[in-house]
Image 1 (cartoon, rainbow, N blue to C red):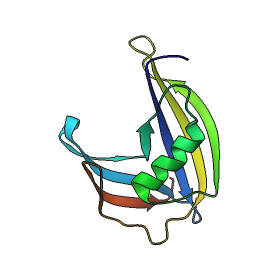
Image 2 (tube, rainbow, N blue to C red):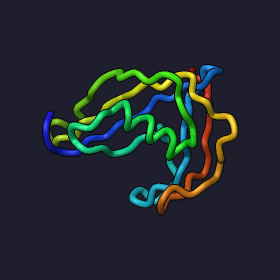
Image 3 (cartoon, rainbow, N blue to C red):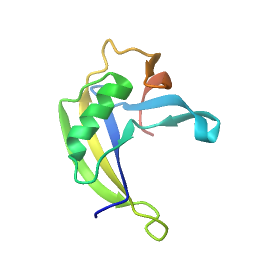
Image 4 (cartoon, one colour):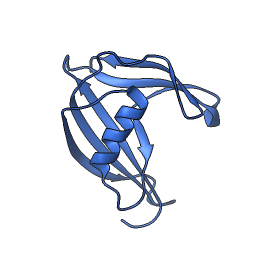
Length: 116
């Protein structure tokens, strides 16, 4: 798919089989939200490399393995938004900072939760 917005979402799983989630303030919605590590990328970019970069930037973590799970088109009837979903496994979260600044955003909390 060419043009439009392109993003990558990272399903990051640590060695205890827990999923890494972020809680951070999102000004457009006026509240804190809980979300997966994610970020925008240039069309034609490498979603695996971008996933590794976002995991490092947002959770100060590194994965041993990354795998592209798929490419989704979000709201294809309204606009072109491509979303790559990447699985990152054996994520090292030892020694990461829980509260820190990323650009103009404040990451409030990094969680590791067991899937239901």
